[in-house]
Length: 125
Image (cartoon, rainbow, N blue to C red; front, top):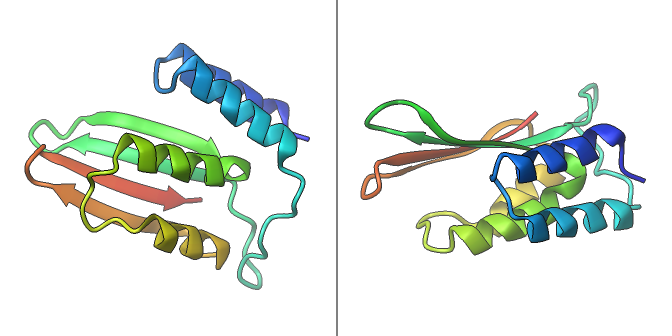
């Protein structure tokens, strides 16, 4: 069962316009269906709680997108990312999932899109 904190985070993303109401409903359903235990982190490390995506405008240095997704929703989040940004070159969504499942933490992706002037960073914390 999903925590209240996770549900509130999803509702906040809808309210801020970061995701649609339909995407929010899908995330909430995924929370209800997520009964499998999380993958084991490295020995001595705490389990990661958040999957963070940050998109920065390289011209101004300001954050365009800063989304925090509970780790219980990573599968849905990766699918949403693939749907919203299928044209991002050099991004292998399967590699991101493998890094997460292996227990890797910290920055797992850093891509610069020179054409659009954006930098995309993904963190597991």
